[in-house]
Length: 298
Image (tube, rainbow, N blue to C red; front, side):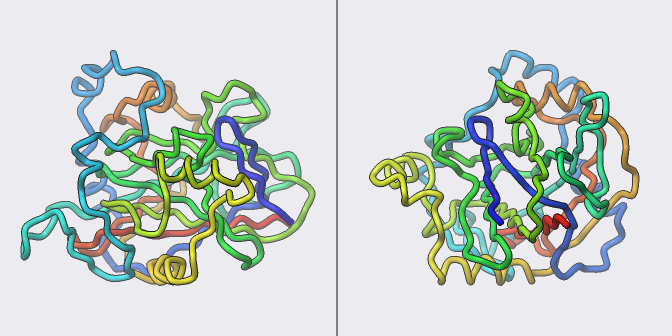
């Protein structure tokens, strides 16, 4: 069984979805949800950005690109760009919402633990509470990991995500309907998607021009696979404690404002629905947040 992933210019075939999360703390769900949503912009602030161009650049701003890179770790890691002893005021947060296409062609919120069948279509909407870098890896039946995002054919190899500006996998703005969804095929198996959100780029993982050059030298090098040392650190990150807030409310269609935010690079406002699953680091000094989704098709 293989996972074929095409984001915007790519095609994705996935299997069934069952969510799994790392060790969780006992923080009340409302506190986690409130802490994540409080940094969303107000409606007035969002509308003031209405002139932004469609599909924001995922390349780092020049000032950000000059920052020192760090390695992923499983515990609380000091952020190197802050003065020694100064804690980052904000915990890292990542929101995930699974959408499926209904009989009318609408994107509706779906329960990740539901049973999927051949022909079902899904899409993942991601939202962060801070500016940072999003990495997505995939393993098939416990096999070798491959880098899905950043990707040489998407966003010029960039993966810089801005706070509360949603990111879709795959994009609903793709030119063709077949490129807008992850489609379940007839092959049974288990896929695991690793979502890694970091304050600074990971060492040992190429991005932007470095990724384009790496893949351009020999196309069979891509998709990129991290070496054993880098991958071990990412897997250890799955065990780091996280705070979680999850909803049991599904079936609601994606709002027009959510679609607009994705297409135009606008921040989601406080009035928009919260992500179905919100994960936050246990410490404000943690530089990396790692979580996984298991995709199972029977």
